Length: 216
Image (cartoon, rainbow, N blue to C red; front, side):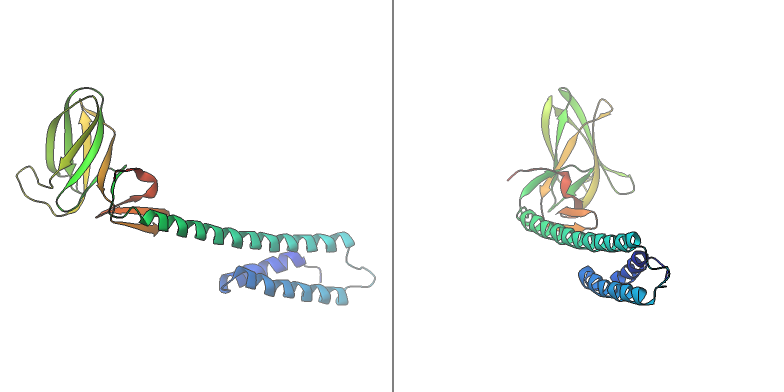
């Protein structure tokens, strides 16, 4: 039996891990298999050409390393899960509060939406609201002061049509240049996606990392 025990054990570990409910349970079974293969190899080796001591030791070390790595990965998975659960509970306390987030969309909630923007100078600022297809729904020119400004929207188009609650794209420009802004709304929920925690503001959903501030 000349095949490397470490390689055979690693292959069986991969196969068992995909079907077992626990990596540790899978490892336990493969560790027993490894010992059985080791005993079989020792019993059937050629007496005139016994297993090299260095090879034997190397295979034991390799399999031990695999065992330790799986244990470490399993512990890290549990730690990440505990951290995410704790963060989720803390984040849920924001539900119902006014928050500001970085987003290119307004959150129209109960017929109102808002944003905070920073003007580079005192003068007119153009705020444009569009739908998903890029059609202009409303466009307003407001007089801003240099620095921090706020703007609210009643959810109506330029001809007075009331739009349903939802997420609408928005841009803020001054002299043709885009201005930085944050969207203001009420946190309505917290979710967990494959990429991490998400903060909901009505129909608008943004990564939790987009949170700028909690206003109240």
